[in-house]
Image 1 (cartoon, rainbow, N blue to C red):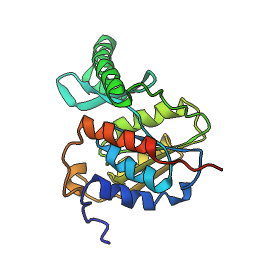
Image 2: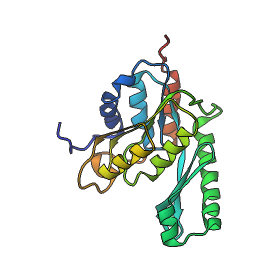
Image 3: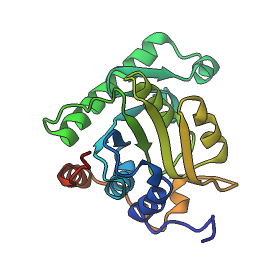
Image 4: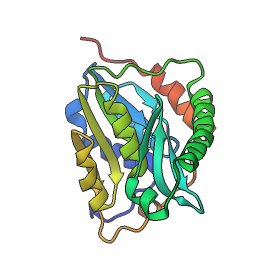
Length: 222
C-alpha cells in the first residue's frame, strides 16, 4: 500500500495501526488510552485487536490569548499542566492569564470526564504498558501533555501510537515516550484530516458507546 494513501476513516486507521502493535497482543499488563474524541475509534480497533482494555485520557489544549488555536500548553487528567515556555515568552503571557485559561479548560475536562466515564474510576497505570492513541499528530502539544501526565503515574512503558503524524512531531515525542509509532509520516504534512477520506467529528455519544463496548471485551487471563 502506498505510504501516502489516505485512510478510509478512523476505524480503518485503527486497524492499520493495530498491525504495528501486535507485539503487545494478549498481555494482561497493556492498556490502550485514547485521546478523545478522535482518538477513541482508532483506539477501539487497537484494543480489540490486542485484547486489551481501553479507556480515555483527557487532555485540553491551553489556547494562547488572542490566538486560541495556538497551544501555549495543555492540561491532562490527574491535574497535570504542561506549558510551552517558548510560546509564553514570545507572546508575553502572564501567569494569571495561564491560570485563568487553565481553570476554564479544567472545567471542560471534568465535564467530559464525567460524561465519558460515568462512574468508572480512572485506571491505575502503575507498572502497565500504556499505549496512548490519537487519530494523528500535527503539533503534538496535546499528546506531549498526555505522555508527561501518564509518566507521572509510573507506568512500565509509555507508547505513543498514531496512524499519521508530522515527521518532526513524531521525532520530538520520543523525548517523552519510550516508543513512538507513527504509521505514516508524509512530507509535507499540513493537517491530520487530509489523510482521511472521512474525518467527521466523533460525537460524545460515539465515545460513550465505544467505551461501553470495550469494557465488554473479554481480557486475556494468564
